[in-house]
Image 1 (cartoon, rainbow, N blue to C red):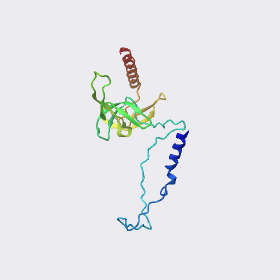
Image 2 (tube, one colour; image 1 turned 120 degrees about the vertical axis):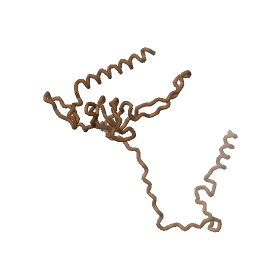
Image 3 (tube, rainbow, N blue to C red; image 1 turned 135 degrees about the vertical axis):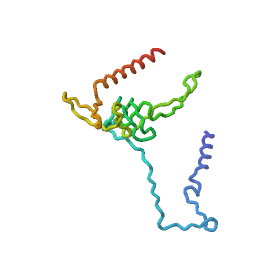
Image 4 (spheres, rainbow, N blue to C red; image 1 turned 90 degrees about the vertical axis):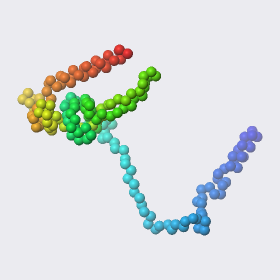
Length: 197
């Protein structure tokens, strides 16, 4: 108990409140200050606008608002602006929340991969990065021309997209069958890969 009382009395001696200079402004006499600066009556107000994080528009359930796009998966397009201007490719992936698309062999980026296992070396691979959908136009392979997209209703009541310049219908049953077959093949390959290892 005696040790505890001694410790408490020593702590009281170190109290900051007993210091007479605590919380007071240091005043330097004008004779000791190196520069004598007069305070200005109208100080200059510098207004800095900080860049704020741009948030995506959300629905009431906090999901992002999906944008309508003029292209779909499997469409043949031509890049009309950017580093890869003039390149032709097929759309492999679409991100509707920010209107970007991934095109085969367009906008390739270099990715440095670390080795995952001890014996396996690291590698440098090329991946396709997304580009904005406004930087592409639909492309006709037959007439080799880019065109804007239009919508019309066929005689059987089916609504389809077509190229305005050529009149070529994009949404045909053959295209959808090819896309479904390609998706099935991808699913089979993905299912077979874990089973093989």
